[in-house]
Image 1 (cartoon, rainbow, N blue to C red):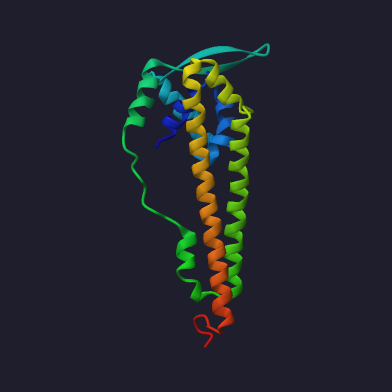
Image 2 (cartoon, rainbow, N blue to C red):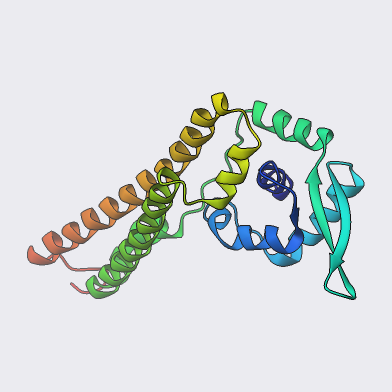
Length: 202
């Protein structure tokens, strides 16, 4: 996935300024696709050059102006073409698993600290995702409301269910990571209880 496709996906809901797009990328979108602010505006300019978005310059206050980006037919076709392609999965790079595979070079205290931090991180992520699912089901998501307003009612169920499906997938990943950390902590308790030394302690 590229930043371009993430921007196109957000713009399917409604036209937005670059500032509003950044707000979404700092909020809910960030949990699926993070992008530095410094990358968003240049990419929007490139998308404009490629005719994937069109721009309307409107007043902002008495002297300033702002650029409002709207999806073009070409932009929608680009998004659809991307969605038709199979996902290309990047190579795995998981520092938490590499650390866990070599805990014997550290200490029981350091290993426990790592796993507790891992558990806390994903517990916070789980709370966020579950809150997003709750907001979605209660229709407290402004971007979803905008999307639903512009589509026929017959399409609403699919729109909502696919968002719920994606968010629940993230919740499931967070729960799996919490379970993995709990398993690791139990393993450390067992090994330490049995008097198993770490590297160089025997």
